[in-house]
Length: 392
Image 1 (tube, rainbow, N blue to C red):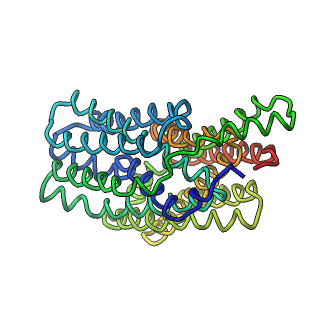
Image 2 (cartoon, rainbow, N blue to C red):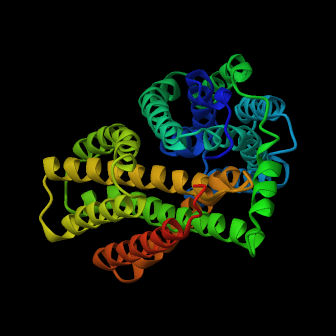
C-alpha cells in the first residue's frame, strides 16, 4: 500500500518508533505535572506558565512542519539522535535557570528537538503495510508513559523540586539512544516510486490530487484535536462546577486517561471490519453522546468517571483513524511527518477558543461548539475517505 518494506513491519521497529514518538510529545503530554513543578520552584504566574509550555509547542510545531522538506532526504537515526541530545540537554539546563527569557528559549529548543525525534518516528509507522497497527501502538505507548509519569513526577517534585523533575525527564529521553539502532535509517525510495507509478498510469492532475487529500486529512487532524484538547482542558472545570470532590475529580482524570489507551486497539479492530468513514461516524456519535451527557444529567463521581473514560477512549479512536487515513492518502510519503505539527496546531488553538466560548457564553455553548467542530471534522474525513485513490 505505502511502498513499505519488511523492516517497517517488524515489531521492534514500530514499537521503538512508538516509544520515540511518545518521548517527543512528553512535555505536552505531562504538562499538568511539568507545569506544576515549574510553578512551585520558579515562582511563575499563570501567564508565564502558559508562555513556558507554549514555547515547547511552538518549537515542536515549527520543527515538525519543516519535516516535509527533509524527511525523505536525511538519515532518520541521525535526526533522532540530534533530537534526543537537544531534548536531554535542554531538560538538564532548565533545572539550573530561573530567568524567564532563558527558560522560554530552552523550551523552544526542546520543542525543536522533539520535532527532529517525533517526525521520523511517526513516518516509520506511516510506511508500514498496515499503519493502523503502528498508530494503535503509538497511542497505547504514549498513554502508558504519560500515566506513569503523571503519577511519579509529583513525588519527585516533592523531594527534589523542578531540577529533579527535569533530570528525570532528561534521563528518560537519553534512554532513547539505546533504541535508535532499531529504527530504519530511512525509506528514500518511497516518494520517487509513487511519482513514477502515477506517471505511468497517466493520471490527470495527479500532483495536485496527491497534495490535496493529505492536506485535507491533516486539516481533519487539526479540527479533531482542536475539539478534543479544547474540551479536555476544561473537563476539570465541568466537575468543579458540578461540586464534585477534588479527590474524585483527580482520580477520574487519571483513570480515564489510562483507560483511553483502549482507543488505539479499538480503532484497529474497527478498521478491519467496516469502512473508515463509518468508523469515524461511530466515533463522533459516541463523543457527542458523551458530551451531551455532561450537561444533560446531574454529575456524580461515578458518572463523571464513566464520561471521562468514554471521552478519552473515543478521542483516541478518532486520532488513530485520522493518522491511518493520512498514511493511506500520502502518495509522496512526506505528509505523515506533518501529523505532529497538525496535532500541535489543534492542541494550541483548542483551549484558547473554547476558553473564550466558556467565559463568554457558558458551558452548554462550549459543548455545542465542540460538537460542531467534531461534526465538521467527520464530514471532511468522510470526503477524504470516499475520494482516496485505489492504491490506498
